Image (cartoon, rainbow, N blue to C red; front, side):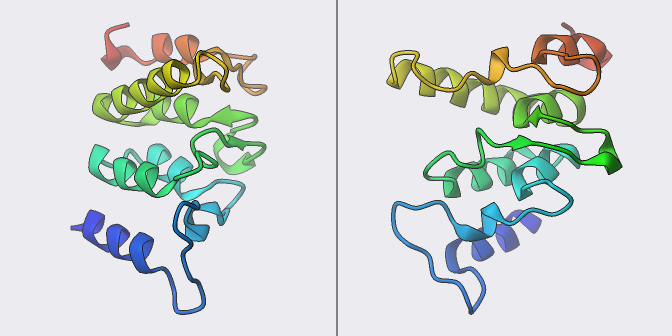
Length: 140
């Protein structure tokens, strides 16, 4: 039922916030410990429904391509949403993120940021494939 609460918050926001059509919901851009809600959802292993709702509200892809510059609490430095999801999220969330990245690259003719080829500064400069290989239950 938490996805219903998130859906309501994303649609209506708080009383002090109004949403502009065609703009990323401002609630999604509020950081907690250096992380946006989409990063926290992937870190906590939230369901694909919740991550999908967050992505739908991220109209301008500001959150999708954002990087956790530093979060000492979780040893995350320059981590993308894909790095975090590969380490902590269910497989269906990872598939959703990769599909969104591939679709974005196809629409833009390949001229977009590349989550699949971005290395983390923490953990020895790991690329997403390295994170996936370190996780045994993905079958990589």
